[in-house]
Image (tube, rainbow, N blue to C red; front, side):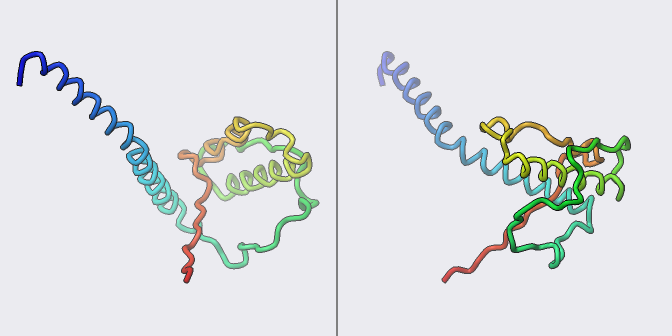
Length: 144
């Protein structure tokens, strides 16, 4: 190898490494997100061992109208920072009130992608420090 070929070889190596990085980044990010989600689910079930779905909680019919007994707007979060049955009940009521409100106004405030990322309820105000309010599990289906 001649002395003038060394910079060309170094450029080829840098280009190869940059291409490998670009190709591998999505896969590495996906693996990292799966690990973080797995940790969050484990922590949630560790902190809330009674948080399991009951058969009667699983509805199959779509909601046609919001229930009549829901409050008319978002409710304020509890002043305490440690989770209690009361703070969970307050959080549930605040979530129901928000859902009823966006149902009533036809989701008018959700007009662009950034509106879906806006913070509506801060779960840490209700004692959920890691901002995880629940876990959704979708069982696999055996398609044949």
